[in-house]
Amino acid sequence: MAIGKLDLVKIIAQKLGVTQKESADFLNVFIETIEENLAKGDKVQLVGFGTFLTRKRESREGRKPATGEKITIPASIAPAFRPGKRLKEKLNS
Image 1 (cartoon, rainbow, N blue to C red):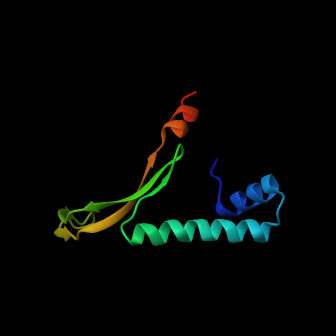
Image 2 (image 1 turned 135 degrees about the vertical axis):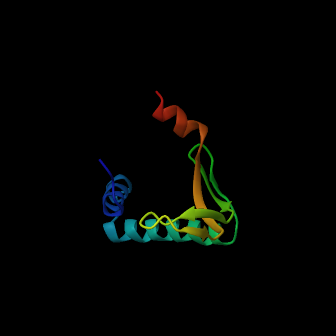
Image 3 (image 1 turned 45 degrees about the vertical axis):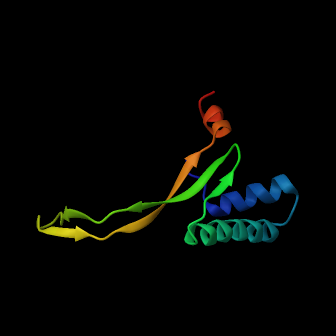
């Protein structure tokens, strides 16, 4: 089962005893802060949970699935997440 943003807002509001609007505001600021720092090329490290970072992808040759025609896939920057020790332990316990 997947947990969506609205579900997270409700869970945070319930656990912290705040309104859903306050919880949504917090979550939006949290996400925006991570996005802004990744866009600057910085890592966002939450000790024990994990690290949000970016990875550079070099340009490469690919094929269009429909026609088989060769194309060049341009270089890009992709977001990534590296889980922390505590998170790994929790998932494997």
